Length: 101
Image (tube, rainbow, N blue to C red; front, side, top):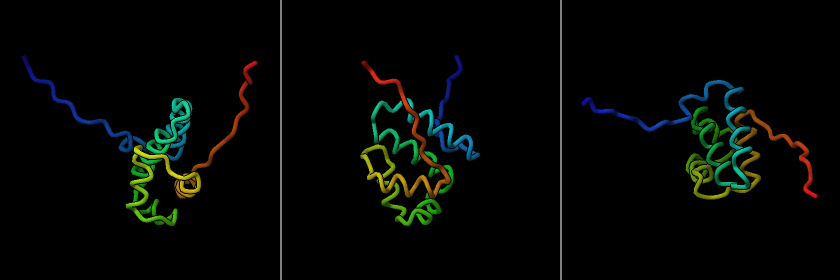
């Protein structure tokens, strides 16, 4: 029987256009269920796709602090998220949901 070899999937390798990046972030926001670290990790995936060094420079952050903030192991400050989103050319949108009750 032949052996099956697998490799680790890296979503950053598949985010090529701004539209794909925005769609990925939108899907992650919907799936996050309030998990800020999950959203930070998704933004980190997009930053890696664009080039972490350039994103850090554009956001006015060090590359090391950007990696830490977007590792998914912590919840970065909202100011950091806004700086990175601007550097990525993305923006957040608000949408009304039906209230319970």
